[in-house]
Length: 473
Ligand SMILES: *[C@@H]1O[C@H](CO)[C@@H](O)[C@H](O)[C@H]1NC(C)=O
Ligand SMILES: *[C@@H]1O[C@H](CO)[C@@H](O)[C@H](O)[C@H]1NC(C)=O
Ligand SMILES: *[C@@H]1O[C@H](CO)[C@@H](O)[C@H](O)[C@H]1NC(C)=O
Ligand SMILES: *[C@@H]1O[C@H](CO)[C@@H](O)[C@H](O)[C@H]1NC(C)=O
Ligand SMILES: *[C@@H]1O[C@H](CO)[C@@H](O)[C@H](O)[C@H]1NC(C)=O
Image (cartoon, rainbow, N blue to C red; front, side, top):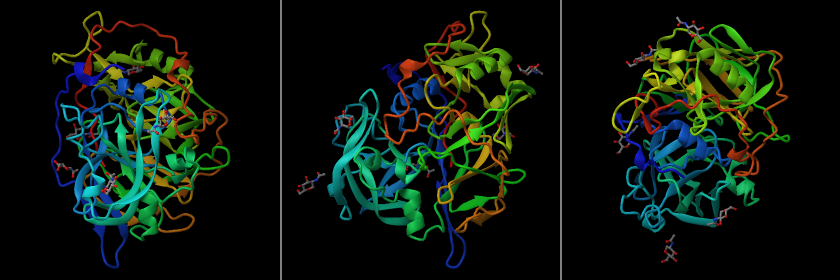
């Protein structure tokens, strides 16, 4: 595994705003809103590659975090930064005594750690917490419970994991389906209420549903609203699609992609492809043949080392879009959202052999793995994840919106305000054959990637992402 040490972290523009905004009034709407911060990602393609070895949406590299939020855990409260992840379902944190955190470079310091016996509200649950990858890396230790707060909003006895052994310097806040928790898939135990489910159970929000607005690549701000929708952060109407079940159960945010256009040209039509909505993935991964066509259309050059492709950075000034249709709606992604700026460790951009500056392209081949709509897609969409109704509501995002009109998500059917059910949504016939209910064993190994390398003409590959990618919420 190549380490991040050879890569320079450039343009580390961290925001220092008060991150958490709680909107809750005595008799007003029950909504918990959080802002997030972005951190630069060193090399998103490399990071995703590590991540995709296993099934869980857990990143393995220390600094390569995208979207994160602040929380406190324990009594007295201990501050932690957590990587927000719709692709996994467990919250877990590092502890200072792990081999990783004891390293002299203090890798866990920036995100914080938790010491069970230093908290008077800590309760031990069991020693079967274990998130792991096909290559054996991951985090393992105890499941415990303690008081967890987000900006003063408190959850008592929330269950989470402690990584007594860990390969990830930052804790993860997985907010997916409870069925995808590792205690279900690996320890064969019943699901527990993870963070969004616990918020609903405790009455902080009315139902287990939340909205994510990531905003655009050049922006630092975004938000997550548990139990609410901000109608000023999208255009048109929210349209509601069913989540696809896997083996009869709902465990992941899979919906059906039906067509794809690049600059007005149809790349794939009449598809019925299951795709995973995953904030923990930097890039978007689609079937190899589809990706090959996209690369031909935009002149991207594939680098098999990175498992990703490069385009001339000037493509960011192209005003065309990539259009993703899901029965309905269509989400258009501006070309500039797909062109990720990179610099070498010496501060220069990688170039093609002819000297033209090269940028990373935001779409990569899925190979034998799951098709994933990662952050390069998700920034262009406002997404409501309704776990109670097994539905996803989508609308085109409104970039840089400073207005806000937060409305509450209620209970029961049609609880997402203003959302319209899509008539006759297409069911997936492909892309759902890799259910990952086995938690860690479902995605298939990266060895199965059959994508044919096009060209490998990049001069510099030691890169750091500059302008994009921090967190938001
Ligand atoms: C998170 O906490 C860090 C460290 O205290 C602080 O610098 C940062 O501004 C906070 N961010 C948010 C989004 O609250
Ligand atoms: C906490 O303290 C108790 C009592 O000293 C000890 O048995 C236990 O192993 C400690 N737990 C951890 C996680 O360090
Ligand atoms: C976690 O699970 C992996 C894979 O099954 C196993 O190799 C590893 O030993 C386990 N770790 C712990 C600490 O139990
Ligand atoms: C934008 O990119 C598309 C796809 O590569 C291409 O067909 C189109 O000509 C480009 N437009 C401009 C103005 O360069
Ligand atoms: C959003 O704001 C950023 C920062 O000011 C700016 O660079 C970007 O172009 C804006 N995006 C849109 C779509 O207007």
